[in-house]
Length: 368
Ligand SMILES: [Zn+2]
Image 1 (cartoon, rainbow, N blue to C red):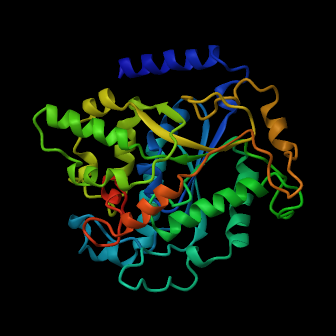
Image 2: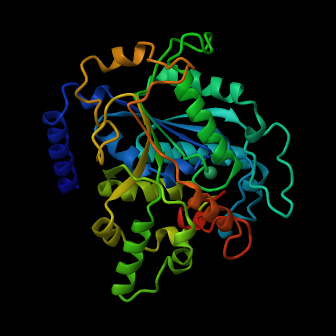
């Protein structure tokens, strides 16, 4: 414990004497996710690290995860859980947020479920995936204007993997990023506030290769062998940002385990020992999607380019520059994977086991 406390003190000192003219305590980060448990499998250690450093971190869950299967064998037949899965998942989410040290908001939409079959069945009426984007974006704009984040995180345009709620989470976050600082947009949803950067949670193929190789060298079975067979068919995203967060990997895993109905405690997520993870890949990876401020890439901080700004909050309160078509004038925008990758992607949807799902979902600790 003493060692951990010491490390934390040292790091806070570094933050205070680094780029910063404003204290870390004045910074705010908002992580937008589709379902309860996504916040614990994508960027969780990053949020725990920033929270520990005094950044205010807010996780937003777009849906309540009402249509998630119970993936933990040991809980599948528990009648109390089956009777009120929605409440169970709210309780799990509260525990996970406490473990990560973040605050949490439900956006209040209903889980679309993961459609299965050929052809795919239509999405259920009233679900998040079918809501008009003006409705869902207004809900997120309201939360942004209330919490006033400087930085947002979300998923890429493919949702990170093809679940309709994940794709919609991208659409809604990007629409809210464009609208939140516009006084003419959703005038009844609060005072305009322009977040300055938005990131996609990235998944690094190199990380899986490194972890897999390290496990094999240590004499274990290759944990990601199946997935690595398909590695070339996955779109290559641009990783711009690696956040060191190995001191918070345990919190990440504890938070994921708090979603007890959604996670198999003996599953592949937990197979790579902590010391191997810390040694081989002590980061979480991000793709900077858009920035209104100049950035210096690659970077190791989601607040890069922001800490040195005079009056950061004042910048976010001012209406951002827009081009004649009304689009934000960006200092940086990512380039989505090109046509070759699109082709590879359509191949990928016929994935190896033919179940129409991205095999990454189990590797990502992703559960619905
Ligand atoms: Zn999800």
